[in-house]
Image (cartoon, rainbow, N blue to C red; front, side):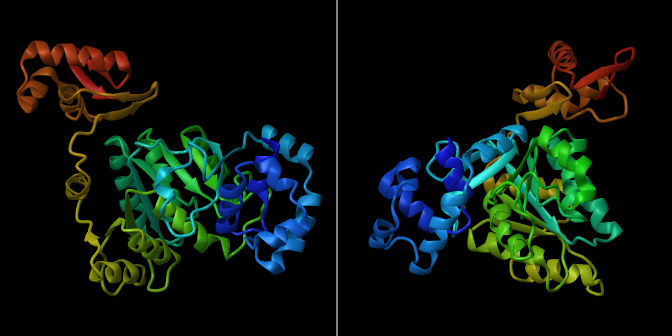
Length: 361
């Protein structure tokens, strides 16, 4: 572990150089012990980097690094590891390493990346919160960058729905940026994870944020652009998504609103138009063949429902509904509905509010 942590923490080598070195030697300790002359003979590392690589290697403290990541609950996964996200393996400049606190997305997890302006409008805030909540309730995980504005509201909407949410950082995962988002940072760790290609204790720098956007789009199945000015960092994510062959949808706005210039422009270039949550989910299901949505969340955890169970569960919201109303909506017989309602109550997904009336928890 200690040599892997050293190699992952190195800031001198490019992702491609790291990959080529590991492909050749298959062992982090062996790479650590390579001398300067041999490294030069390999012609893998750029000539002007080798001396700095040796200096950084000599300065690395295994004891301090191991103690720090243990204290902060930081884990690391590298490109050739089994649990490295498959979706990132084939993007341009795949990060060799990912540091994370909490969890990485599961291989089968359906991920929607939501991005947009830091200084968003009230319209952008409302739409982002609402869409993240509804997508979360439908079993999608929400991914963003935890920046102020749209990113934060995307995470908050997912948390409200008790859905998984993940944040990609432009600094070390031990550094909450922006600092005002610390409570959000803690909740994301509990309900998903914070992820970065940058090593612990690496401070945020302006050039890191455009680079991390390729990971935001790379991990996504679908990218939603909620608000963006004509020249916006969010458009960088959208362009990465286009290069990666991802499906993009954008929220249209009035042509006179500067925060809609970017979204309207990407729609003009062929992105899907977000007109309603129902239409968006329908379009996503059509693209990805996700018409059956078996995953729902409660305070007790994540559950996979059978089709009829999901049909009954989808009838409930935060207003009381009677058994007769559920029967009318689903077309199921009374015994099936009663059995499913009892099961959903046991799971903590719904509860009885009045006699024979139920609400979503």
